[in-house]
Image 1 (tube, rainbow, N blue to C red):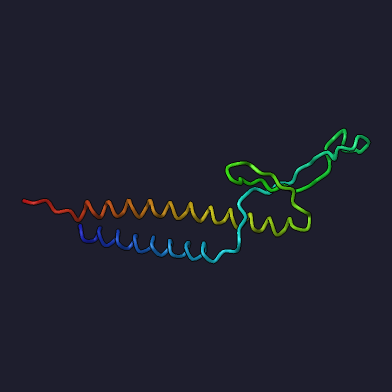
Image 2 (image 1 turned 90 degrees about the vertical axis):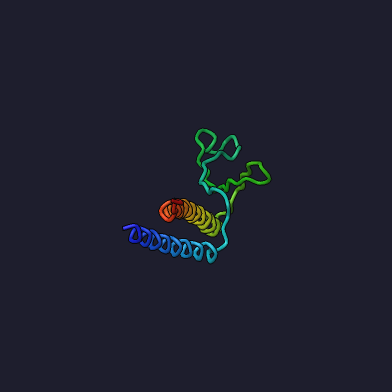
Length: 124
């Protein structure tokens, strides 16, 4: 019985190692990424006679990032929005892969602790 249990745990460990390797491959082969959040914002232009003076309606894109510990908000040109969005999406995907990797590490540690306890022999 004990041997079967150990073999099952070893099989689960191998499966986790394979999943970890697959995630790592995806993380290392991903496109360039951009850390931050891209948002579409409505603003006023500041001209008193513009229609936006009563209700903000000029649309533009901003990238919110942290730089040297300070928040930074950059206006993104319309022509660059697609490229920036793709890089921000790559960053989000990378973060999700990192979360998956941490979850697998936790599972691997738990299985190894169980194996340690099962394989321990007491001196008689």
